[in-house]
Image (cartoon, rainbow, N blue to C red; front, side, top):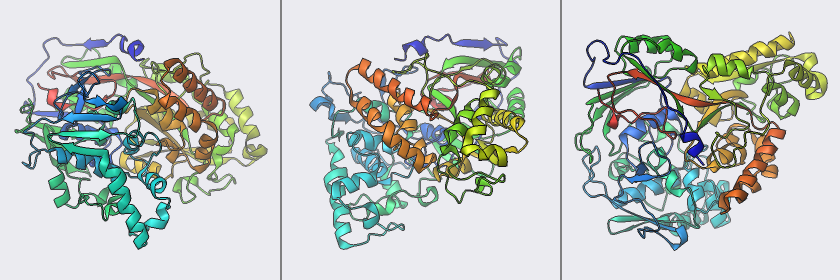
Length: 612
């Protein structure tokens, strides 16, 4: 399904064959993205800034084979499980990973099969709201459950709220008994230790499983359990496991510390200055990395990132598409463009914002704000998707390095259909829809509405500003406030259902349509939790059953048909509002060696392979 995308021509602009000037900071690789991690805990983190650090400080059982997404290499595991080598058995329900011996954690502890089993179980029990662990819970439960609390309720017949208080205290002796039994009978047998192997026991065969535990899935990181337990993480016991469920990032010892075995150790996280310092792990099982130090410095201002690159004070930087032409004909600079990315950027409209949100203004349809259910009116949603000049955006903002897609799923995935209707720029249609919205009252009284984006992401900022210009041109009573938030603040607001209209994207967790279709259009998907209960109710009634059927359908043509049906529903109801599918950019000094693209990883970098 990805061959169509992977044959895209990789356009390389290489200026200055021999480079120019002496290499600066020869022992240190300096990368300037924008933003900063939300958390360094692999079971909490679910964003690219956090993953950037986790990828380089933790290892997983297996990894992708270079740029391929259809082949794996061993990592902590000695072999990649297959049916042929006998490590995938029982029709795909039993999957064994024989482990490499002698792997060291940064603490000096030796990695054991018990560390692997603890890491997986701790992640399942941790399962924070809108976090990544639902992916493994879905796979291991046979897609019966998408969260640990639902899984417990299904097993015990007791509601989570009847078993555990909001402070994570058990409510009764009966609840304690059921919680302990759930761990002993359901969670503990999921991953067993057999000699020097760990064995996963799935409820039913699940095709994407290997994708979900490969290296670019940060939640599959192997954690030093001895260090973690000694520092306050889950103690590995059945009694009391619920005390570590759905923790706030500051409540976990792994929030600002690393307990991994990866090629780099964490030296410092200066959260105020968005600066991460890593140091080479000399005892890394693959041998020491070429670079002694790595600095990941979130610099939100593009002009500052560019100046530091040109001066040689940075080696790689994040460059918004609209500025790529600025790096042509500059000695010593290499820009790689046009490589495929499994990603889509979108406009999200929240159908049920938490009324406490500071972004609702008055919270009423009175000309001074918007009500929490503002976007339940389909006329408002239809108007929004007509207020982006998509052609101008692709040309002027993306510099041609992107394309429109019909829904929130990238081209090349199973079920993608480029003939499906796409959003269009049409001010007349937008005006007509807004005059019908809220039974005509909206046009009469007006509104003050936010358009939020994460600071430093100029492409999202430009989309928000474009929406503002065209919306306000239709009616002097319409006001759009463009608001930028730092990444960690942005994620927290989204997870707490506080953002009414916002620009964000999704980079694939694994190369299967379920990752995008489920994330956006299933009531248990990550972004459904950002868009309110009315949105989730719509999905329960219209798309959930189709998505669940498609996940286990063995016939590819039937799966494609089901995914197309889902897309038709979300297009008709303006549930999907994609802005663009990007193609990749990486700009660096020409002294940087060892970089390659990967559709599942970019823009994150693996520093183990980079040198000067």
